[in-house]
Length: 560
Ligand SMILES: CC/C=C\C/C=C\C/C=C\C/C=C/C(=O)SCCNC(=O)CCNC(=O)[C@H](O)C(C)(C)COP(=O)(O)OP(=O)(O)OC[C@H]1O[C@@H](n2cnc3c(N)ncnc32)[C@H](O)[C@@H]1OP(=O)(O)O
Ligand SMILES: Cc1cc2nc3c(=O)[nH]c(=O)nc-3n(C[C@H](O)[C@H](O)[C@H](O)COP(=O)(O)OP(=O)(O)OC[C@H]3O[C@@H](n4cnc5c(N)ncnc54)[C@H](O)[C@@H]3O)c2cc1C
Image (cartoon, rainbow, N blue to C red):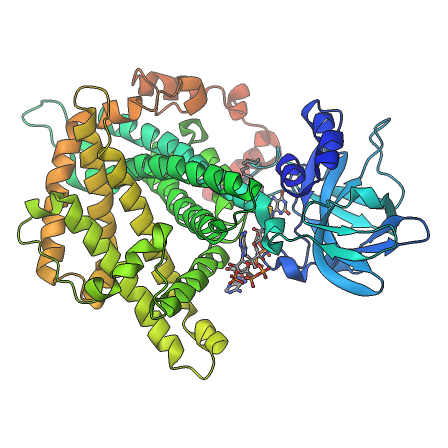
């Protein structure tokens, strides 16, 4: 994040100076924005950067305990430099949050520089899974840096101390977060596909109950409950891959537009990166835990790979923006878009469907049979109607409040759901668009169409309340969707293992005894057990000190 921050907020000259040092690891940088007292509320950060015209320097200072930088990855022990986000103060005026490059440690002996106090913030969730990352704490005691270490692409401070705002949107200060959020969506797909690969392969070799007259027991992958829990996660792994590919295209397109000072798609980029990051990471965190449960007791073993995958993955729901905070950002943009519908301003991009407000507010879903749900047009319109009607309902309710902000606050739980509906529409839309493309490989397109329908109909089934409450579907149509879903599971079953083999993960990368490509799980589980340090001695440490006295005492008592 140190690198994209300098790329996005540094001048050409600053990029030329600092990026080669970072690329060659002559310096190691981190992204120091979050503080002990503020993470979500960036504008609430307290660290100060006060310009001193006498010396042409900024004085970086931590005025309060809560202004201590807290969480930045790599800060505690590894980094020599940081991009520090602080309140820029010059000529006695606070101009808000800006980025500054600050050296933290000596390049000679790695010791903290004068005025810099830093260290690791301690152990984290999951008994050490994330402890390979030295998330750190950092305090400044009036540390001086040259004025030219203020990142000056978006705004400048002159030698005389005058603040100059460039003619670019101030939100570009948040550009690094947008970049990382879009990459996190692709990360979600990778993490989810790993968990699903483990769970599908294990479910194919695990047999429990169901043997007829002494024959083999039933593969748990054949149980409809296992399929109804597992196949939507398989479909989601593919869905997040395709929407992540599209989001990367969107981000690249927005970045190219920014180069020519075209800011027209900045809001779209913010809404899509924030919303897709929130929805895909929440779904993936829940899915990894579900995959653990799908593997029964063995899923709880570290050798299954799932506990560590879960512990390392779940902070994704928080870092790079708490998911609720990000979805409320999407909700704000939805409300703004709805308010503009009456002005005749046509929504564009992923909001374009809201321009069909007249139709979508009264459309009746035409589905009459379960098979009708295989028609992408019916799925698309149902998801559009649900999302639009939820957004309009929120806007109408907010409009009845005494003031907009109060209304937004009161309705924020409903707004959250409307934002999720909008983002799920994007995911479904991009999956449908993907399977409409030419897809090489015999039978591959059909399998992806099945997974697209599984993702869409499972999401519809899971959020059926929204569809019914908004009148987008009738209960009968909801039941038909569920009926079709069951038929789709049967079609996915024969190809389930092939669809996870297609992720092409090596056993090493997967890191799971349960997910081995050869399916030879039981000997591997048994072999793995003996590597447990507890098995280095046959009689456990502590027997003589604790168990033996207890056993002997109980034996005596039993003879009294
Ligand atoms: C290279 C690395 C690759 C992969 C790494 C993978 C994983 C990394 C693992 C861990 C690293 C973790 C790092 C971090 O966690 S870094 C810190 C992350 N912190 C956050 O995300 C903070 C979240 N908070 C915010 O973003 C802002 O505080 C928030 C947007 C919530 C509020 O901002 P603010 O108070 O300034 O403004 P608002 O009034 O809400 O909005 C004003 C205006 O600006 C628009 N806006 C807001 N954000 C953006 C944006 N990012 N881009 C564009 N526009 C933005 C907003 O819509 C409003 O517009 P308008 O209504 O038109 O005025
Ligand atoms: C593993 C990890 C790595 C990290 N790496 C970095 C890093 O490299 N650099 C960096 O700068 N930061 C980093 N962070 C910090 C991270 O960005 C913040 O923790 C994150 O942005 C959440 O902010 P917070 O902790 O202030 O949460 P809070 O905002 O305090 O969240 C607490 C609760 O308040 C709710 N909430 C907050 N505001 C609102 C609102 N307006 N409306 C409704 N509900 C609200 C949230 O939804 C949440 O439920 C990292 C964090 C973790 C866990």
